[in-house]
Structures are given as structure tokens and as C-alpha cells.
Image 1 (cartoon, protein in one colour):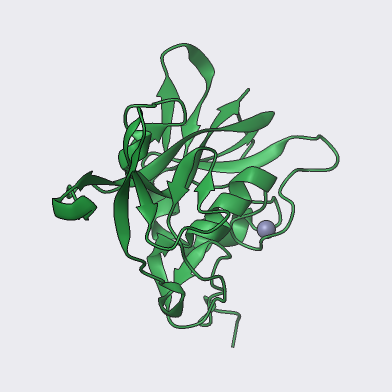
Image 2 (image 1 turned 180 degrees about the horizontal axis):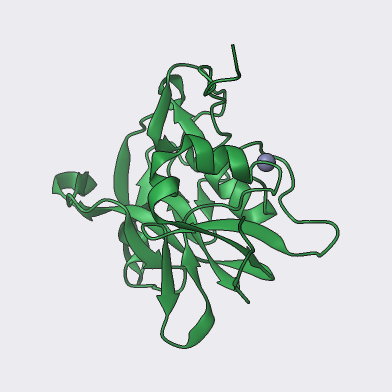
Length: 209
Ligand SMILES: [Zn+2]
């Protein structure tokens, strides 16, 4: 018997689990001179992050993995602290100071004013986890490039959009995973952020063998 493909896949750190869902009632508050703003009906410290209302989820990794969904808290943590999306450890290579990052066609886009960078919603992957990530994720296999970046900064969010209904009730517009820049003041009051998008700088293709 030779070592075949692993049957018990490690569930990546960022993947959401079924029991982490924590839907909360949303409504619109009226701010003097500032118009309506999306909020939870029981506001807590930490609901608003970087000026945007963030989706509440639990962080217990319980229940079946939801392979197509990321846990908002862990995705955010990976982006802000540059942690590996697979193992949750520090992604930055201590030898070079650069951050290994798998860029995919669906989670990365270039910016017109920066040919050596862009925006991505997928967190970095530490070099130790890159082979596993490429081997186990079919999507990565098809359209991915292993890169490194010099640094990354929060730039936008992916958000679900709402409008005020009767009595301030929050009504979903049906627009999900809309990219909203952190400085887009007109859209932010209507957005519930589910993922943090970062801008990466000095993106370079890593050698692949
Ligand atoms: Zn890792």
C-alpha cells in the first residue's frame, strides 16, 4: 500500500462551520443629520469594525464544515494579522519578511493604478501549507498563482446590502458579497460586512516546481 490521497482532510482555519451561524435581527437607526444606518437591535461594542457593521458569527469550529463559506471572524483575523488561512499561524516568511499568498482568479483583481498589486478577499497561506492548499482545493488547482507580497492593508469589505423598510426594519436588497470600499461613505450605512478585503503591494510570482 502506498500513501494515497488523504481521506481525512484538515478543515482550513477560515472555513465556516454549521454551528457558528448566529443570525441577529437588524434594523435601521436614524442618526441626526446623518440619515439611516444599519445596526443590530441590541448593539454591542465591536459590532462596527473599521466603520462598517460586521456580521456576527460564533467562533467555535463546531458543526459540519461549510466548504464554500468563510467564517467572518477568522477571515477578518487572518487579514488583519496576516495569518495563514489553512493553519491559522503567522503567514509571513521570517527569512524574507514577505507574505506568501495564493492568488485566484475569483478572489483577486488588479487595480488600474497599480500594476504590482491588487485587491483580494482570500487571506494568505503560509509556505508550509501551500502544497496542502493546492492539493486539496479543486478551485485553487484550476486558477491559482503562488505569489508573495510585501505588505497588505485593509481596503474594502464584501457585504450584504440592506435598505430601510417599514418601521426601520432592515430589508435585504438581494445583493450579496458586494465590494464596498472602506471610504465609500454613501454605501457603508447600508452594508453588513462578511469579509475583509485587503490591498496587496509588490506582488511577485513565487517560483513553482
Ligand atoms: Zn499554514
